[in-house]
Image 1 (spheres, rainbow, N blue to C red):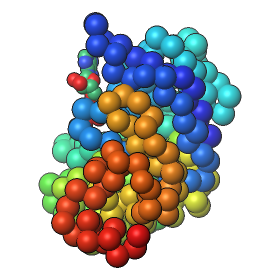
Image 2: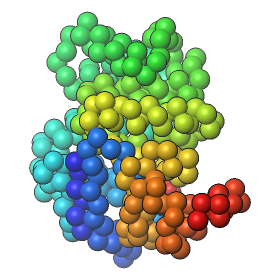
Image 3: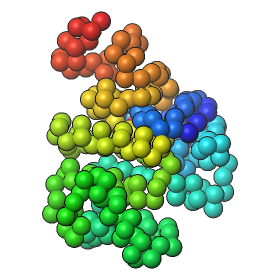
Image 4: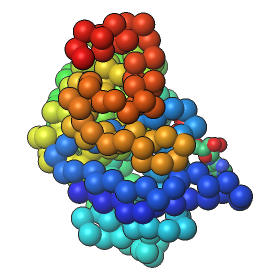
Amino acid sequence: MIEVKNISKTFGDTQILHDISFCFEKGKTNLIIGQSGSGKSVLTKCIVGLHKPEQGEILFNGRDMVKMNNRDKKSVRKEIGMLFQGSALFDSLTVMENVMYPLTMFTKMNKAEMKERAKFCLDRVDIIGKNDLYPSEISGGMQKRVAIARAIAMKPRYLFCDEPNSGLDPKTSILIDELIKDLTQEYDMTTVVITHDMNSVLEIGDNIMFIYKGHNHWTGNKESILTTQNQEVVDFVYSSKFMKMYREKII
Ligand SMILES: Nc1ncnc2c1ncn2[C@@H]1O[C@H](COP(=O)(O)OP(=O)(O)OP(=O)(O)O)[C@@H](O)[C@H]1O
């Protein structure tokens, strides 16, 4: 579980985050949604310790990231798996080497152990027989799976996914969403997903925080977002004609 309590962040004279609180639950996919520029990335960077908020607490199972020294931060970061926008695989490393990378950096495993762990993770995300290929030789959807395998290689307690569906077709997006949800439950991780994708919101939104102009403006889940009367959420979620028609049918 990650508890964010009363987080505020200012750059220069501009306050970006205003007194944000939210609980990211264990074993759940917790979504951060909101318009471009609303503060999702700044909040995420505060959570993982890349920005220091002026105020508030960020508790990783009770351990406050804001107050930690660098050594303790590093040790919490080892428990975090990151899935970056656009996969961010290393072009010059093979699929297998990409997944082994965090193990070579942060563990004392020998090569055989690393290979075994990487193979297990690749099998789990259904990447079979591609171990010696380079990222440019596999599809975007496969690259995303490899990036997920790399993110879970260290058996993280916390998984952060930044726009996991960017650049994917709708069908592949749903498969990636399902994979993230299944892994979250299987490994009982606290998963945080930043997304603009409304399909994801409706498929995997166990807990949802809607950030509006740096405030936690609305919280709910994939069911309650369907019927919310919060005007800013309605404007955000139901901006397309199709979604407007859908809402008219269900309300
Ligand atoms: N390092 C920084 N210094 C100053 N301002 C920043 C910095 N990082 C972000 N900002 C500002 O904070 C605001 C929120 O940015 P942020 O990147 O968190 O938005 P976002 O919701 O993630 O947007 P998007 O969906 O487009 O990625 C923006 O006005 C941005 O310019």
